[in-house]
Image (tube, rainbow, N blue to C red; front, side, top):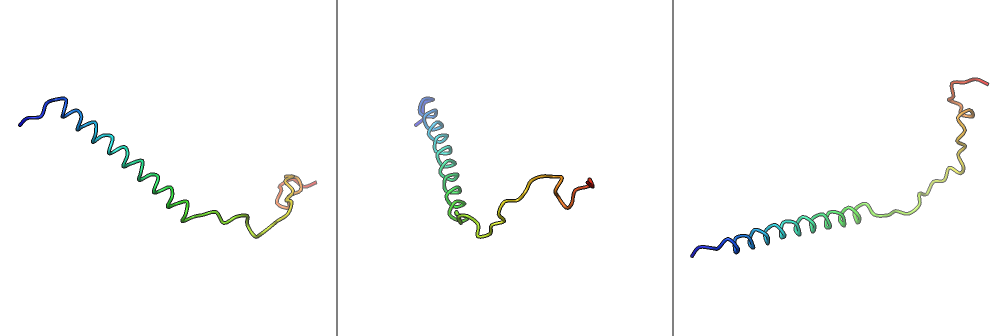
Length: 65
């Protein structure tokens, strides 16, 4: 019993869609795994306050005033 070209095309299309769906599912699972493995730990416990961002006031600047 030989398959017609239309049946072969249907099987090929179905196989292609199954591969795409499987890859999408794997990416979603990987994303969920990373989300729950890393998680959101909230704000950090340390606080440096306001750090001045003026290059001339840096003790490591190369210009002397």
